Amino acid sequence: MSEHAKPWPRKTRELHSHHFDSTVWNDFKFRNDDVVISTYAKSGTTWTQQIVAQLLFNGAQDIPVSEMSPWLDLRVPPKEIKLGALEAQSHRRFVKTHLPVDALVFSPSAKYIYIGRDGRDVVWSLYNHHANANAAWYAALNDTPGLVGPRIEPPKGDVVNYFREWLDSDGYPFWPLWENVRSWWEIRELPNVQFVHFANLKKDLPSEMKRIAKFLDIEVDPARWDAILAHCSFEYMKKHADKAAPLGGALWEGGGETFIHKGTNGRWRDQLPAEDSKRYEERAIKELGPACARWLATGEF
Image 1 (cartoon, rainbow, N blue to C red):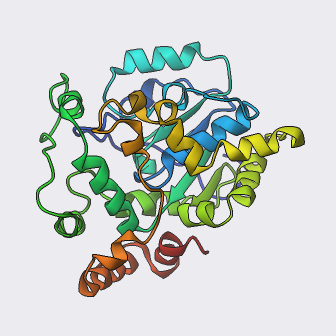
Image 2 (cartoon, helix red, strand yellow):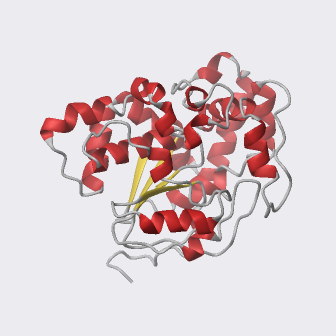
């Protein structure tokens, strides 16, 4: 037991799907300075990976972030390949996850960054991600040996219908939002957990990056700060999407620039009927409580 009052989180279950194989965490050998970047999905994961990479590597150009920082619980490639590559890394490691806390192994010595985003913005980005996936994406998720559960199929209908099905079926066809956010919210006060919000990254990127650097105990070279900041801009990332997007964007029509899409919030406002938006807001309060729902919507505690 550490100095904090509550016990450290413990893994209590495994999650398997067309995307997930949570058992990989059982074999991951932590180092004391590991960084784990966590989101539900489409909430600024790749952006935060880029930020961490730039802070760690002092503003270097063209860091192959997606290669260096794998999605640990994605079931492809096989965990032996993924874990072997991570074990061979000599730099400070940073991985990503989309699991709720109780489905991963939690290390008291690692640092965890959790990024939130309004669920309506998430779905608008998720729809683009799903609708532009190509045959190789479906083959990797559906045809690779070891699939547990149903296959993932192309989306049907427009983004509004997609949102309704996602809300009514608790994250379908991906995974539940509420349990993910709830599980991380419950441990937000642990000393090795930091909350970040997509809206705050958009509003004041320099301040948020300095806050992340402080949390990770990274001393930034002032002479490199302008380069670090420039390399974390949306424009830079879209231009260098072959380094930031998984497999350089090979699994999406249009490549990496499709994966790194618009990076904006509020696109749902002109398309989502008011009654659907209200239903989402009421569900968020019911599932998360007022304080967490407010944070997820605005980034404000």
